[in-house]
Length: 142
Image 1: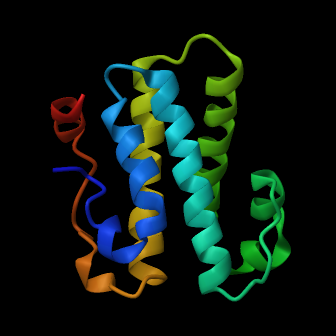
Image 2 (image 1 turned 180 degrees about the vertical axis):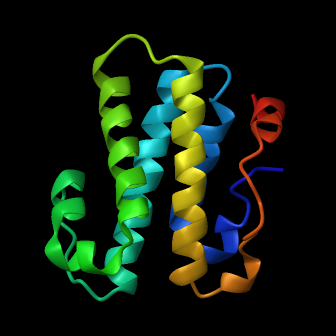
């Protein structure tokens, strides 16, 4: 079972990308970071809708810099979203992403997904609030 299974009933739009990020963690760190960024973008789009912020710009950096968005999202979550964005960019443009860096990014994605699902989903009861990202689950999926 995926670390991100809870997204099926909380933020389903991000489930596929989050699952892909996790499934590539051990075998393809570049793909894991790419899909982490994609899932983070989907979670950000979900937040724009849930917070009633209107149209989300196409550029993830612009989304994360929107003052209304910044007022609504805790700094720790914003920091995680920026980290995912930056490493995702590196994954697209560079040849090498260490497995440890990919594991950190997928873990950050897990934290963001937990927060978004807990605070801005129709099913917060499904969120595993006490859970930690389990790399062993990811390894079994590779």
